[in-house]
Image 1 (cartoon, each protein chain N blue to C red):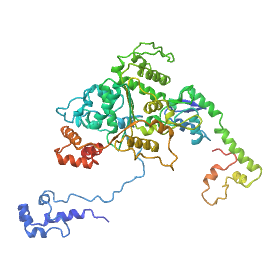
Image 2: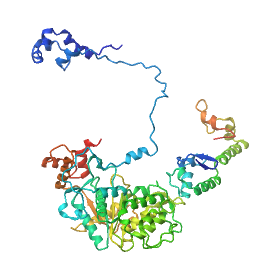
Image 3: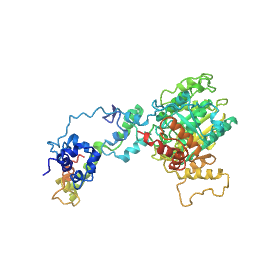
Length: 481
Length: 119
């Protein structure tokens, strides 16, 4: 049988009832000093004479132990319970994937300048935080350069840290474009070291310099068999188009590059297209003609032909999540064989450009970023990137990794694709860059400590020698709600 | 609603699931049918073009599924019974066929083992 009153409550109750009035009425300090008072407290309680005030106020006896509750009919389901409205199809995903780019609660950072076309080339701008102009933000959003995992939503305005690798990459891009050559580069590095962010910066640079930007935000969307595909009629060997994805891509390209497209007109006639587009008609007209998935691939080919015609602005072709396009895809051919990713036409276009087979006549860059959080195991790609990195290291080419002679899973096509690419390996940021970044966080009102040598060192070390994402976790984690 | 082989399917139903709703068409066969018509495994019925739908109906009507597949099973059982095998007799009696105990737990056998087997 359970007692109606909690024993602890009773123990608390006792002194207040039993202590003589003259003791209780004295000041609390005096009461605790008098041995009589402590003698009245419960023998096994560690809360000696706890809160003399409390005793006076309530007597402490109000708490009644709940005990076992008997609930009748507990097995009957309450069928009438209102569960609320179920989310509409796609609503949860939309919430999961939403990208917030500004937060009015964050403080505006005084003296934060907008990026201009030349800012990313100037070595003096290494280790500075600059914000992305609004027009470019729209373009980046249209080309899906922002990721839901990046925490843009806690700052007032999207801003980026220009690190030394940024300046290096942009200078290389600029140099390549100047000589009408194509920079073919893979950004790799450990987890959350800022690979996708570097791609975003490259796109920002391209938009600021009126390049044409084509971005495939996630390689996996193309190869995990989650979008429509069909064999391209008359192709031998058979290639596959992904109509719906390509339609979406054309619309993204059109929206992101509207400014450049509006100045350009077509130079080829495209007799194969259903819609008649004569030579000299605006490029927007061609891009706008993609309304249905059926002829999207054809229009994309025409658009690509136009974009790579002579006399166009430089082109940036970017892809994130390279490992996914360097493996056998999850699609199956009509003969029930798995299709290699490089047989998917859009992926093929990218891979050919990356391998150097399809260079851009107007110069530009083909950038790919690997991913560590979400990537299938691709031994060939890992090996090829490690080899290229070792070859490009200045000291000696003696330690170029060799393939494992006892492993059969290497992929010839992947090796061929990555034979001549450049590799940019990202690691942690320097302490100076870390300091600048933390000062920006502090100025935005998010990091609420003094940014001094100690604080920077602490976060830099906690973040595995300046891995940006880890630093962010160490410093801003409490803000992620 | 999408109409395949006399059945209506909701537009949001996965094509794979819709195919597997037919008797004697399991994951293996459905994966092959999907590959044959270049339908990706996560496609919904609503996304199929009309041409593919008629092709699917034609494909399914050429396969041994539904009543035809049931008849094959029934014929097998009938054959066993007609030649007087033990398995045939046990089928006719609605009892387990492969030497199981029959004191308890023979509900599945009771339900399924019959000469005109339905499922």
